[in-house]
Amino acid sequence: MSESNKQRICIRKAKRLFFLRFFFKAAALSIVALGLYQLLHPRGEELYHAELLFGFCLTMTALYTLAQYLNDIFVFREHRIVHFHGLLSLRFRRTSIAYIDIREIRVQQNLAHRLLNVGTLLLGTASTGHHEMILTEVHDPHTLVKNIEKHISFLQKRRLEEELPSSEPQDRKRQVQVT
Image (cartoon, rainbow, N blue to C red):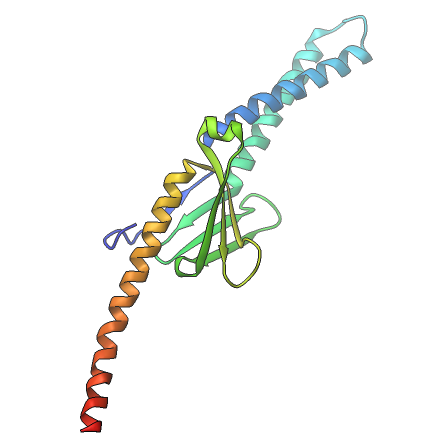
């Protein structure tokens, strides 16, 4: 995000983690469903129903995982970060933090997240003791932290440059009034 790049950048959660979650959820749900089917029908009369149950579990798991993936979006604008949560749910939440207000950026990763190059970013300001924005399951979090820090320093430098020329004429006016 440089001076010429004034468009917004949207990112979603890491895809790798969602595909793994889908696989494990689908496998676990299918095993449970087939086990329940075997308990209810011990003779194994109709496997057609078991196949339908397996397909239903797989479809529902895929839809739920896709809805979780599409539910969050992180938008990096020129002056602020906006997190939209609940795009596909009944509760919608929008959190926004200006880059200038960010005082702490923390990355949390467990072993599986490090292997997949995924992490959680915790963004905090000086106004409260907790983190105002939590960006979960972000791909390549350390590079994102570096880019955010570069953009913060760019905005701070630009703010200082805008303040310096305005302070010089006031100093000259004071010197003229004193003499």
